[in-house]
Image (cartoon, rainbow, N blue to C red; front, side):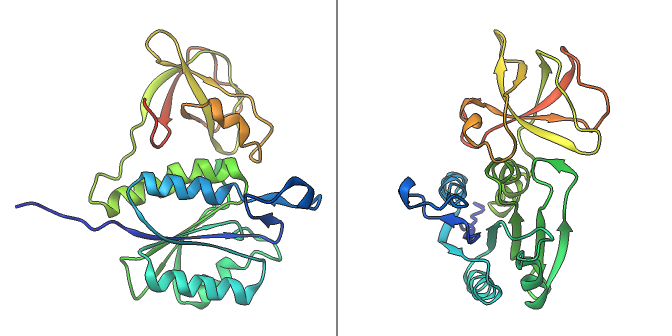
Length: 242
């Protein structure tokens, strides 16, 4: 007997008054504004994973607009992915919106870097649907999409949810975070590509530095740096050749 799964339907909601369309000209951006890099990035990742992307909408930091977008997305999708608006700030409305719509919060915040403000919620009346709220900074979005969205989509497709982690060794000393596990963009080195080198970055808003990465290196939460030659785990990027 052949088992068949339908493509998971996904709605993507990006948020933020400061976020402008990707094609916005530089001279049209105010000093506090940025282009929407998260939307196109997640669009490509989700399509690459085999989902059916129903729509991508951007909403301003407005409670009514947030609720309307959330209701619309839930009505037509198996999985709703949101970007931004999930922290504890005054204009982060999405946690309250999901609660008002009767969703049960499963995860609210994770001890990782980057990507601490992750939210996972589910309608009590429909356990086949799921909401995953990602942070707003681009590298945080990229990392948490791999760690949280990828296994969920695999499970929805009827595949094993486990991700293709592989054992590697560090090729240099790496500073760690004493309070949070870190998932740093890294490149593989060595003749057999079994050594990992963390790429220098300027924080979770520095998306450009990931262009040279092959995946993410998982660093333990500890006070002491991870020495060169230490065993570690590496997750190849979605769609990568490794």
